[in-house]
Length: 501
Image (tube, rainbow, N blue to C red; front, side, top):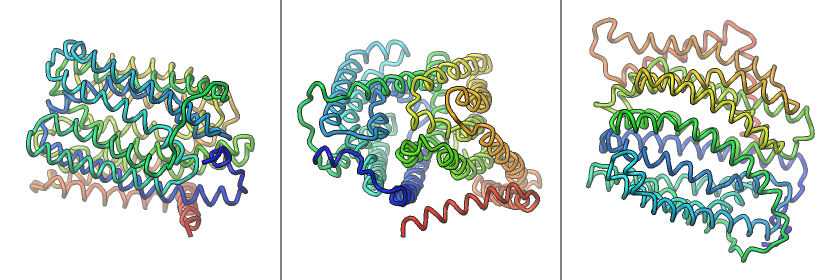
């Protein structure tokens, strides 16, 4: 691979649009598959591993997650958005990620007994030392994965990202059937990282050379540093609840919280992050064309948020049925937690296009400042909610997300040109559909109990989905503006479909 191969090819706008459309289609199919796998993994393993065992892994995962952000150091996003990237710059970024991963791996292994003592759980020592190798494995994969994104090889990346969780789930099921404890979850995480590493290296066909000075990588570190700070702040605020629950309530309640979070928020993250993978390279190229940039943001909000928020509305209304179907007996206390996370996830999705803007225009410093402000809201919500136990913590998390949504529009409009008003109106139209859909789902799911029939969770969930769909249809029939939004969604999906042909 030459430096010219690594640099951007400067193709026409039309070819860029076609490639983005193909990428969107492939990525959507890949993520739909991954989300199904994620939900299947939660459903199957929840019947093999009890809540307290999940809580043990969650205690360590919260610490490992902080290290993973440090390991990436914002350099994957820096590489993906760069207009030009030479071979030597990529080599240097690779070795930086590997070095950080190796240091974090050694540090985590050494600190494992301290983490176990902090939570007063001796089993955490072995869990921590095993998961420490994720830092090294992911450090080796970071720039190869970023390279596939830069080259818009979304189909190849999709194959890797689907194969990894399939292999990992199979391994976890085998271990779960043998042990019925936390080792199944640990194996799942390590196997996912290992298969991803093998896949991106095989697909990348790139062997890094030794690092060299004066390669022009300082700008990547500046951008990555700002992004790193904002990610650390956001992750710490999001996962404060894990530490609070683990330290004060123990592994049982933490396991309930963790599985509810993973059942909903993890698939939601898997849906939103690849949307950034597709949108970021394109938005970065049109960042200086306000009309095109704004148009893509407005369309992106509808394509991403409208279907997601409507589905989340059904989850809020039928949370008991969702838990009964996907987690099974013994997990009933997770239902109110799931409903709270659905509210939080909807608000985050409505504001997500703002994150695209920060990255595409290189506003990592402004993103860090915004993240600090929102972290205060999240921490306040969790700490206030902790007086009411695990349910209060989840409610505080949801309340902070609700406040962050309007704040995000105002904050971003202070630092760059941004269609905040139009995006806010678009979000309100989505909520105008989601609220009645959620209420209809709740009413429909409650019908079997209301008439004295002994309905199963599956029956209640089916009724909720049907009730939600019928109500959405009535909303579209009654309000022309909502029909226009739905038509825009259909138009974009058709354009994406046509771009693949």
